[in-house]
Amino acid sequence: MLRREKSHEWLDKLSRESWQLELLISGFSIFLLIQGLDLAEQKFQLFFNRLQLLDFDLRQELESYSWFLLMGGKGLLYNLVLHLFLRGLWIAAVGLRTFNSGTSFATQGYTPLFQRTLKRNTLSLDDYIIQLDKFCSNIFAFSYLVLFVALCTGSYIFLLKGSIYLVTWLVGGTSSPILEPALIFWGVVIILVSSIYVLDFAFLSPFKREKGIDRIYYPFYKFLSWISLSFIYRTLYYTMMGNRISRRFLWFIVPFYIVIYLGDSIHVQTQPLIPKSSNTLSIHPGYYDNLNPKRSVKLASTPSKYVSNGMLEVFVPITLNKKLTSRINRHCSQQTAVHSTLISSDFALFKIDESTIQQEDKVKPYLDCMNQLFRISIDDQVLHSHPFFHQNPITTQYGLSYMIDIDTLPRGVHHVQVGLIDTKKVADRDSVYFRPYALFPIWKL
Image 1 (cartoon, rainbow, N blue to C red):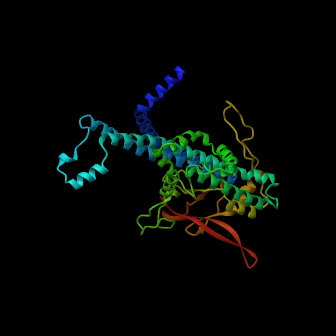
Image 2: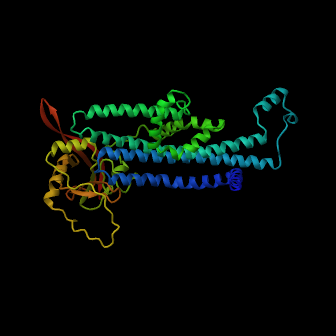
Image 3: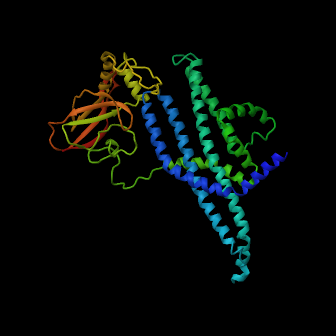
C-alpha cells in the first residue's frame, strides 16, 4: 500500500513538471523529424525500387503501408510544432505573472460598454495560464495518438489486403471460376465492417453505448481491435475521451488526416506559360541522373544532359505493373521466370557463390523479349542497340541499359525518344503500333 502511494506521489509530481519533458521531447523530435522524413521517404523509395520485380499487388500494399508511416510522421511533426509554439506562449504568460498578476479594466479608462465586454471575453492571467497548460498537454498527447493511429491503420489495411490472398487460396487459386464472386463478397464484407469500426472510433464509441447493438458489434470489435493493433493507443484514446477538453481533440482525428492528405496532394502550378511535360524544348530533371532529386527514374534517364564522348547511355526501368506484365505475357507467351524470388543474407563471411554466372541460353530469351517491347530513337531515327540488364547504382531500380553509338552525330542538341511497341485489334487483326512516352534533349560536346 505504501509503495502504491509513493508511486502516485511520484506520478503526481511528474505530471506537474511534465512541461519540461514536453519541451525537451518536442524540440528534439521536431529536429529529428525535419531531418528524417525526407531521408525516410528516399529510403522507402530505394527499397521499393529493389522490389520492382516482385508481385505488383504486394508491392502496392507495401507502398500504401509506407505512405501511412510517412503521414503519421508528418502529422506528428505538425502537431509538435504547434505544441512547441503554444508551450512557448505559456512560458511567456508564466513569466509575465512574476511581476504582474493581472489588470483592472476599470483603471484603464475604458467605457462601461467595453469594460463589460472585456470582462466577459477576457480570461484572467491565472485562468489563461491554466487553460494554455491543459491545451498544451492535450495536444502533446494528441500528437502521439495521431502517430499511433496512422501506424495501426497501415497495419490494418495491410492485413486486410493480405486476406485476399487467403481467399484466393481457399477457393482454389486464380483459375477458380468462383474467385471473382468470392472476392466481391469478401470486399463488401471488409468495407461494411471496417466502415462501422471507423464510425465507432471517429464518433467516440456510439455502438458501445447502445444495448442490443453492443452484443452484435462486440465480435467485430474484438477482431478488428486485434488486427488494427489498437492496444498501442487504446489507453490514450479512452483517457482523452473522459475529459471534455481532450474529447474535442478526438473529434478532430479523422478531419486532421483529411487535411494532411489534401495538403500533401495539392500542387499549385506556377508559371502557366511554361510547359511542365516532356517536349523537345524543355529540360526535365527527372530524365538526368545527376539532376534527379527523387531517387527514382519514372520513364527513362541518362547520366547527364551533356555527352562528352561518342556513347550515349539510356536507362529504361522495368516496373512490372499490370499493363507491362500483360504485354510481356502477350508478346512472350513462352517466357518463364529467369529466377525465383528469394530472401538471402550476406552475413556469412568469406562466402563464395558458385552460381554467379548464369547460362546465356536462360537469360537471352527474356532479354530479347524485353528488347522487342521498347524502342529508342534519336532525332526521329530509330537506332538499334543491344540492351543489357542493369541495376541503376543510384536509384537501385532494375531495367535495361542501352549503350548507343552517337559518334557519327554532329555536335549540338539532339532529341532522345523512348517508347513502347504494342499491338491492338484493328478490323479483327493485330496491328503493331509505337507509343512514345519519354522525350528529352541531350547535348553532344
